[in-house]
Amino acid sequence: MERKVGTIVRGVRAPIIRKGDDLSEIVVNSVLEAQESEGFAPGEKDVIAVTEAVVARAQGNYASVDDIAADVAAKFGEETVGVIFPILSRNRFAICLRGIAKGLKKIVLMLSYPSDEVGNHLIDLERLDEKGINPYTDVLTEARYRELFGVILHPFTGVDYVAYYKNLIKEMGAEVEIIFSNNCRTILNYTPNVIHCDIHTRQRTKRILQSAGAAKVYGLDEILTAPINDSGYNENYGLLGSNKATENSVKLFPRDCMPFVESVQAKMLERTGKKVEVMVYGDGAFKDPVGKIWELADPVVSPAYTSGLEGTPNEIKLKYLADNNFADLSGDALKEAISDYIRRKGDNLVGQMEAQGTTPRRLTDLIGSLCDLTSGSGDKGTPIVYIQNYFDNYAK
Image (cartoon, rainbow, N blue to C red; front, side, top):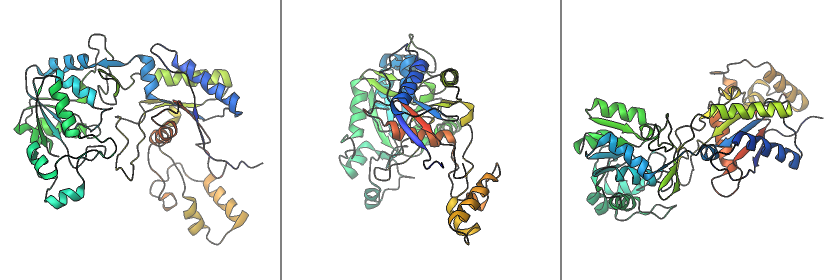
């Protein structure tokens, strides 16, 4: 009988993960228990995805405010430091800022506006237009910002992030000055020493600052790249991708994840006879149309995945075939013509009209976004996502 269902996505429950747990064994057992409970069988090219949070927890990849402070102090000493382009997040950046402030004497905090890099708005664009402010050229002091816009609360959190970050820095014993600019060179009018906190534009920011004569430039990805006092670390991403653990510590992005995904793949093959693909996923890469927040605050969607998840989709647009190539057909004849076309499609459809409108994103970004939406960020308790039939098509 012809199968009538395409991609199937299931959130899989798992125990609460602690440092030192054998996560690959837990993942495999959880998946097999879910299969038995729900009555589905594993198949070739199924995908098991595990959230980065539990991978980092199993690794014990944590760092304290004191660890961050020690690394920052070692890099900058007594210098005044510009901290530029942070995202507006109590979860993602506030604890990192505590550590940075504790390690410094004075911070010039430079915020981008009207929003941060991932879409959290400080100011509505309409209000900028009303006041005649050009965010591409105008630099605002804190006093000028308040004069123009007053107190602005984030619509989701109710937080005045300007006041929140200012008070947080002062509480950690550092002096603070706040400015607003979208040009990274602006900070060099205040100090030649910079920590740039942007995520996806960080290489460009570093290059521009160094070319403009900055003395010391570090990104968040260069803080805690090695352990401080036996702390966690991430040699590739430093503090990028970290999340608040407690008021005085962060959970870092997991490191060295390839052995984990390969172990899960090997154990599933041994216990089921099926070769599945495995990946670790963080934030999905999508943008909320109402809040304007781009979800991707992690440096990458997936820090590790098995080889079968390399590449991008190679797909045909069914509606294009139906409306153009086979516009004179219908019913079973149309179905067979489209199925045959898919079976004979080439390995690289880039530039062909039949592929126009398909999504040329990496498989890991697409699947990771699907997983992030499935597992959520709250209390669903499904840090494992099991996907079937993702690589099927209409002709199979």
